[in-house]
Each structure stands twice: as structure tokens, then as C-alpha cells.
Image (tube, rainbow, N blue to C red):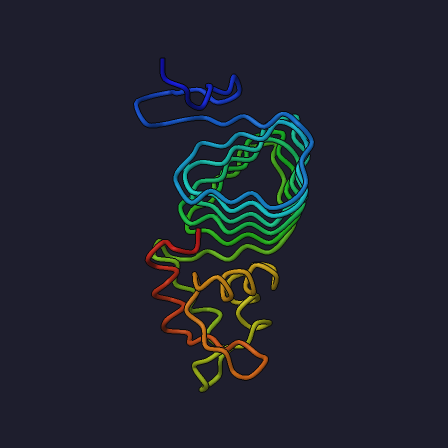
Length: 190
């Protein structure tokens, strides 16, 4: 008899290797998925979401979060900034209040978006934000958080864990734009 992880009733296989993880509860904090997963939130969530794969915010969901993902589909209510590396879809009756950065945006009739939209190319290049750097080619934490449209706490987490290319300058972190752009293009931001 083999002992192992029992299947979660909220986690089910769609196809070989593809899973859907349903979250119907009220949650708070940071959710990070390093491997692709199809995450569907139907309850309430507050905090930070970093996903790979598909993230769906269901019609009954209420989310207050900074979201970084690949494909993000919203049918419920979201307050927070979103970086969708592949596509963001707003399905009726979605209500999104926050800034968006994505190469592809689909807004269905009946869905609303209140915030700024920054269309990026599929490689994640953010040329329109190059003015932040001037001639220096480096950024501090505040500048990088603005450049990537994420919270400063996430920049600190990535830098301290070594995920993000960074150089410690005394008590401060410095980030080279070309290395950050390569890091984003490689998909390691998720």
C-alpha cells in the first residue's frame, strides 16, 4: 500500500498534466505558483497573486490584490494592478479598478475597467517607461516597482531571494535595465 498525498476535491485534472485549483474560501496573503496551474478564485482574496498558467477570477469573487500572471480572466470584482504577460480578458460583469500592463486586452460588453492601460509587446518590453532611467541605465527599488508595475515589497522579495538580477549598494538595491528586461523576457518574473 502506497501512502501519499490524497487528492484535494477542489483540485481536479482536466487533461494529462493540467490541473484546476478552485479557491472558494476567503484568503489573505501572497500566493505564488512557480509551475503552471489553472487557478480559479470564486471567493474573496486580499494580497498578492503571482501565477503561471491561467488565473480566473470568477463572477462571485472579490479580489483586492496585485496580480502578476500569464493569462488572466476576470468576471468578478478586482481592485489592484495587473501585469498579464500573455492576455487579460474582462468578461461581463467584470469590474476592474487598477492599472493594467499586457500585450493583449479583451473587454466584453458589460465589463468595466477604471485605470491606466499600458500595452506592451509580447516579450515584455516596456520601452515607453525608459524615461524613468534617463541616461543612467540603472534603477532603485521605487523606480523598478514603477517600471514593472508591482509593489515595492515584491521587488525586495525578488532581490533578496536572488530571483531578480540586482546589486546591493550599501543598504540599497540597484537594478540594471538591460538585465531586468532580459529577466522579464525570459519569463522568470512569474
